[in-house]
Amino acid sequence: MNKRFALWGGFAVAMAMVIFLMVRFADEDSSVSDTNAAEVQAPVNTDLLEIREDDWYKGNPDADVIIVKYSDFQCPACRFIASMDDQLSGELGEEVLFVFRHFPLRNFEFSQMAARYAEAAGRQGLFWRMHDLIYINQQRWSRGNAEEIFRQFAESMELDMEQFEEDLQDPEIVSKIESDFESGRSAGVRSVPSVYINGEKITNPRSVDAYRSLIESRL
Image (cartoon, rainbow, N blue to C red):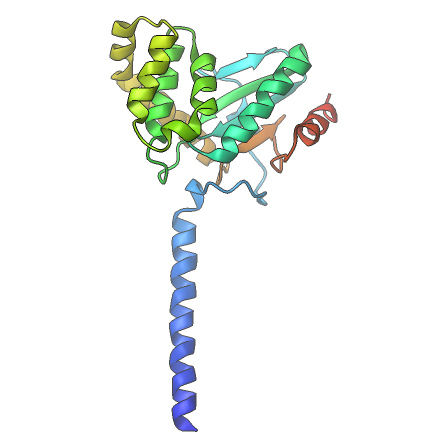
């Protein structure tokens, strides 16, 4: 009888240690989770979601609905939301402004690189074209040879490659990406994609119709 209690006691201690470590590591990685589950968050400082001079956006800057999205280029859920953004931007036109901000995750190998290539293309006015190519081909470059594939994208866009190479090495591009990331952390971003409509964090929509309804309810 005592041996049974001793075994159960040891098992209980071991399980307690496992749970403690799981909670600890979950807390440490909470800001880089790639889940798209909804989260309960404290009220957002809407000043952090104001349009900045260095933001990438498409749509009408004077629109009644402003969507700010923190996203990672290697995150599959982010690719899904990006495809819906593209469709709804075409549908809703001047009624909505879509803003993209980088939130590259530590656990994705090529996230930072993809962000730098998009920013460098943006220096030549083609951020959104590079953005689209990176997301559309995500499954291809995520398996490897990402840098070679990104360079192929740049060449296909007929960029000034000499200028492009210089921009890729510009520390200001890294600073821009880090600035986006830190603004996201300050706004309470703990997972990607994180989408804010008029300063309110929404549960990530699972269909275009659901997303459209969320937007139209605010028009």
